[in-house]
Structures are given as C-alpha cells and as structure tokens.
Length: 331
Image (cartoon, rainbow, N blue to C red; front, side, top):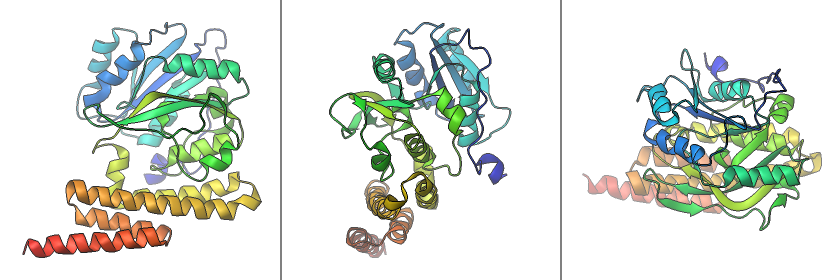
C-alpha cells in the first residue's frame, strides 16, 4: 500500500491532446481536510478575474472527511470552478499527480487548499514567462500566515529584482527556499521530468531541484503568495513521528545525482547542517508552544543524527534540561 501511495520514481505525465482549446493557466487545488481555509483559497483565485478561456480552476479532493468539499466548491465557484473527487484516499503525492494529469493549461499552479495568492500573482508570473521564455518555472516571494490569516513572516529575497536566478541549482540544492503556493511550472516541464515521488515531506524541494537541474527558473521578489501554517497540515503531522527528518535525508541523497560531481560533497554537508539546525529550531518551537517533550526530543535527536554540530548539540542539551525541570516540577 505504501509503495502505491508513494511512487518510487517520477510518475509519467501524459501530454495534452487538445492543443487548440488549451487555457494558458491551470490552477489545480489539492485538498484533504482543509475545509476551514478553502473558501479563502478559492476566493483568492477568483478575485484575480482571469477568464474561463484563459484559466482552468479545479479542486482535486482526496476523500476529505471534515466537510462536503464539493458543496463548498459549488457555493463559492458558482460553476466557475471544476471539482474532482478521488474514489478513495490516495495520499498527497498521488493527489498531486492527479492534479497534473487533469491539468489542461500550459502553466500549472498547484495551490494547496489552505494557502492563498494575493491580487497580481498570476499577472506577475505571466510577465516573468513572457520576458524569460526559456524558464521552465517561475515563482514569487511569499509570506507565512497563521490559522487566522495573521502575518508571521516574509520570505527572504533570493535576488532583489525580477529575472532568471543565477546559479539557482546550487542555491536551491542547499536548502528549501520556497513553498508550492509561490511556484508555477510549465506543463511541458512536468511532461519531460515527471511528477512528485519518493517522500511525503520534502517532495516539493526535490522537484524544485530537479527542475533547476534542467531549466532556467525565473523569480520575482514581490511577496504575492501566502503559505499557511497550522497544526493539521502534512508538515505538522510528520513532526510527531520524526518522518520529516527521515524524508529530508532521503531527498538529500536523491538530489546528489542532479548536481555537478565536484559540488556534491560540499552541498550535502551544507544541506545536512542547514536542516539539522532547522529541525532543532522546530523542536524548540514545539516545546515552547505545546510543552510536548516527547515530540520535541524526537525532533532534536533526529536533527543531531542528521548532522552533528555545536548548535544542534547545545540546543538538544538545553531542551533536555527544560523537559527535566518541568518533569520534576510536576512530581
């Protein structure tokens, strides 16, 4: 069952057969138990007022149990948004694959059902593709928001001006620098390279590195995408089991083949250290917010096993002390 839900190699994406009636855009919205946010997601696309002949909008639901997703789409979309429901729960990777296979447009935006875009997102990306036709993908800056839509942060600038990113492969292979809500990929690129595979956590990072190894990528520093942080998303669920760290270790190994041979060892070391410190900070945040010592220590231990460094080691020791003090105080 696991191998069926997690492809071991990039799924093949079949070309679109009807070239004459293709829209420019396909906004494909995968959903699973994120109905609390879906209204905002759909409205953020509809408000851009891109005509039906130029933009396909479709929700692909993976058997959500929290609400009637089709009813939400019908109410908000009023016939403008298509709906497709999986016959059974297939998992996030297969749902992404369905999104890409069902897309008809030349440019695909996979917008998760809990994320949003700001007005001007599609126009900005269209300008990037028109100005830099060699680009296989394009993305904008983004901001993080919480469950209530409050701003948490703005992403760091990758470069201060719109254009093709210089040495993007070497930059993106060191660390994850974006979220799917900000990224648009030409369908022809998916057709050439295949879909998402291998892991549930970090599958998008692997894809962005794979694309960067084969195509130029364009970027705009405008923060026009909104990535939502909440306790029920996939990233949060994987923290409790430590699967996120196992998956990132796998992705780091996969992307080695995309890199120049002389850069692989250095970039592997940099990426392992980066994610080790990143997961250590996650552990500290979990304990501070939820006082869940078991999950926090699992993250911290996994981070140290990923890469042994002073920052991660000291953070683990401090976390042990905090958990021990709280344990003694409760007895």
